Every structure is written in C-alpha cells, then in structure tokens.
Length: 484
Image 1 (tube, helix red, strand yellow):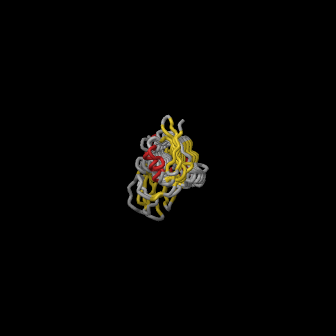
Image 2: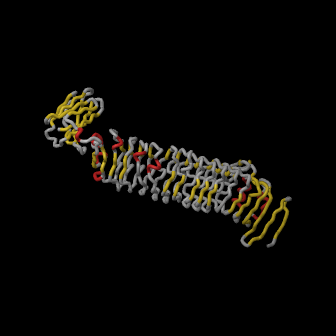
Image 3: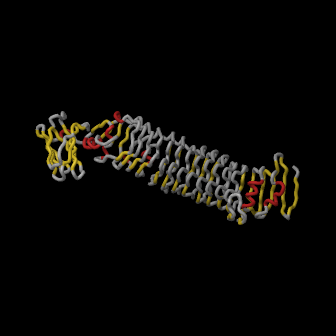
C-alpha cells in the first residue's frame, strides 16, 4: 500500500489508496473540514476526523462526499455553529449536539459519534443507510424522527441516561429486530417505533409512565411484557394496533388508561379480555376490534361501565359472557361478529338496562342466543330494542311457591280475584301496565286512564302466573308477580 504524507496549513493529512476508494484521516478545526479534505472529497470512502467539527462541516461531509461510507468522529468534538442558513434550514447549532438533519439521506453505513455528544437533533440520521450506531452514554435527548426510515438499522439500543425520545424517532426502521429502551425513559412518544415491521423483541424501562399514540404500530412482537412497569399511566391510541403476530400481553396490576384502538387488529391475539381491563373503568372504541381469537372469561369481575364503539368487534370465539354489575352502556357495533355466542348473562345488572349504540350485535343470530335474566329483568329487557331480540332465559332466585295472589312493590299493591286484576298505588297515579308470562313475553297491555286504582280482566290470559309491570306518573316502575 502506497502511503502519501503531506502537510496543509500545518495540519497532517494521511491518505491510503484502497482498491475501491480511499481512506483519509484529518485533524480539523471547526468550519475548516472542507479545506482539509480538499480535492479528495469525491473519492474518500472512509474518513476519520479528530479535532473539532461543526454543523457546516457535517453538511459538507454528507452532501459533498458522495463515495463516503464510513465516518469516525470518536476522536472529535462537535462545536457550536452560528452562521449562514444551512440546507437543514438552521443557522445555529449547539455544541455537543448532532445537528438537525446532519446526516439525512446519507449513504454512509457506519458513523461513530464523539463520546462527548449529549443530544441528537431532529432528523439527524433520517433515511440514512446506517446498519448500526453506538449512542454515547451521555446522550440525554434524541429528537423527532432522528433515526426515522433507517431501513438498514438492525438493532436499537438506547443509553440508560436517555430522558427524552422524540416523536417518530425510529419510525419505519424495518430491519430492526430488537429494541432496548434504557432504564430512565419515562415516555415513549407518538409513532416512536411505528412501522418497525421486523421488531420482535422490546425491553421496556421499569419506570415507564406513558406509551404514546401509535408508538409501536405494526411491529412484529409476539409477546409483550410490560407488567414490571408499575408506574405506567397510559397506553395511547392505536399504540399496539396492527401487530399481526402479537399473541400475549402482560400488563401491570396498577391502574392505567387504555387508548382508542390500542390493540386493534392484532390477528394472533389470544389474551383474555378481563386480564387486560381489570383495572379500567371503560373499554375504549376499537380497543380490541378484529382479534378473533381473543377470550373473555370472568368479565363479571371487572368494573367496566362503558364498552366503546366497535371495542370488541369480531371476537368470534367468545361463546358465553357474564356482564358486570357496573356496566352502563355498550357502543355501536361493539360486539358485532360474535358468531360463536350462545349466552349472555345479565343477572348482575339488577333493574338496570345498559344503553346501546346502533347494531351492537350485528351479524349475531340473537334469536338463538340466551339472555339470562330474572323475571323482573325480563320485563325490562324484553321491552328494550336490541335486548328484546335475544331468547329470554329466566332464572329466578325465588321459587314459584313464593308467588301469591296478592303482592306489593314500589308503593303499588296488586291482586287477582277470579279473572279480575286490581292494582292500587299508594303514591303516584298509575299511567299504564303490561302483563307478561314467566318467559318474559308480553301477553297483554290493557288500556286504562291515569288513576290511583285500576282494574282489568285477565280472563284471556292463559298463564297461571302473571308478571305485571306498572308505569307510574313519577316515571318509576313497579313489578309484581301474581298467581291466578
């Protein structure tokens, strides 16, 4: 190998001829790198720099050294810059910071940073060809989209001292298979690792508090272990959506907020719903939609008050579900496509009938699905749209032996003598009433004017036990069960 040594302005430059280009080592002062490289800029494939460089020097390296594939700055420092506006649109840059967009679209495959770097700027390495990079331990912040679209980057290792990660920092790093997120990071921001379609292993910091919207959208992980993140407060909208191989999720036992569509369309998902929402008050819209293999057991043990629109759409393997006493509403098409459903147990709800959005059970043959209720509940559910489409299965805690010819409830007394039913209200006037059999089917709705006492013939009623639902002027409802 021929070695040429020359001195320019007192600076030593070494050039070694290589079969496929040239290697160059220079010692530079900030703003002087162009002069030191000279007419070799188009030929150099490997560059080692000692001394100091600034944002203008790095722009020169990235945009005017087309053959460069390796840059070693381990013996250099990054100085501050203040001057003409650069291609990045910036006219200033701080010392110790890899400047914004410094290496964007770079064809370099290897870049070694100075040990003194404390921050990596916005878009600094975006869409570059780097295959690996060692982030110095002193780095505390990585900017927005800093490594976005680095499609050859194979591993992501964040230093333990990192405190701030920018939005979309590693978005679409499609070759990355592993991400170690350090020990100090408390927030993973929006789209940080979205589109990392080969990312199969993620190590989360234990003090993690927030996972932002779309943070891990479309990654390749099969098991998600976040249960040691005991300070977790929220998982953002669509955070783990479209993770087609995600099967199991282990979440912390602490309370946290789950975002809309957080686990949407995770086709391999086999996790149980109750284990994921046991510390939540609601299931957001689209949260688990499209997860056909997901199970639902012990749902009655949750404190869920609201199931959002489309939240559980397409859970086609669920055959039975028991609703929790806390449930107040079920959103539009929330249980669409529950094709295996055979039974819904509503007894925990008492006299409460949850509000429904549109087409909650679209695609479900509700007439073949049992709605398990008590007799008083059957009157309420059978009179409510969508609920009435189920096959009522009445299971009462009390036996028919307890049914008498006379009964009272909510200030209303009732009795049957022969074929005559008499109802008497001690409070608000009676506006109307309906008669049901024990299967919850309405068998008569006699017309009557508002009054404290009303009578009606039950001669045409074939049932030996009649359930009477009485509507009062104060909007309250009394339910009486009477024997003929």
